[in-house]
Image 1: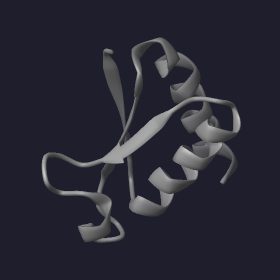
Image 2 (image 1 turned 30 degrees about the vertical axis):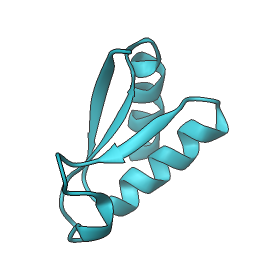
Image 3 (image 1 turned 45 degrees about the vertical axis):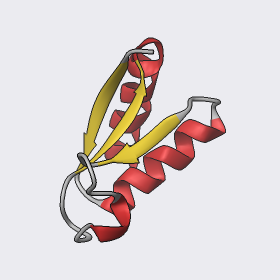
Length: 70
């Protein structure tokens, strides 16, 4: 399975995106590199959300819409 990454500005933003993607049936994983999982992150540092390549365009559109409305 090939994945693509959406880089969010904070853990809060990444979690919100992860939740919205789940609502529309897109599986995503929050991660920021090997061994550096979200629980250890500083709240305002970039965090990556990984999605399947085939879901990327829809996921990116959801993320961009979130950024405009929040």
